[in-house]
Image (cartoon, rainbow, N blue to C red; front, side, top):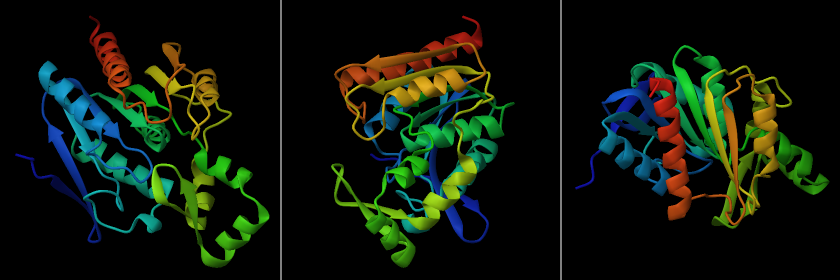
Length: 253
């Protein structure tokens, strides 16, 4: 039987759906990707893995995603970061390891910088750091005009036949949260995984993140035959292994 999500209220207008399993710390907090939700294979695999280990685990949907309130088109990096910080502050307990997939990697790093006393480790899965700047730099004049006149552009995607709605507000607000070229002043334990066949987020971006981080316990794993999602069985094994490695490091075992 599927467990019903709990709800975290953020003011009168916003409700964030989440699943939280108490357990030993450091806890694991999963941040989903752009237009994804907390029912994906990576989130559920991490939840089961954490449960087996007796480790605290939390997954949630940003507003406009999954079971949370709001319209996706109204979201920005800042709003979704605020959702994440609310979950860190009000739902999780003790030190945390954030596991962020794609856009969730960018938001997870931002959360780590905002809560250095709480976030002690980070696993990045095809981390889409600063992706709004990359989109802005890559669009042609016709698309830019469309964004300025209509406010939204349906960006083609192999993951959605209708494309992804990209709003001008998302791209412009994203400028407030850019992290590269750095420094990224996070001294926690970091493991970055990236497929070298990724056609959505350039894998060399993970090398740039590693270089920009101020911490020294940072490792990058490049997977030559993997694409963007890193959701194959062997990819999930790597994600679970990285999470366990950081857990053991933080516990001193």
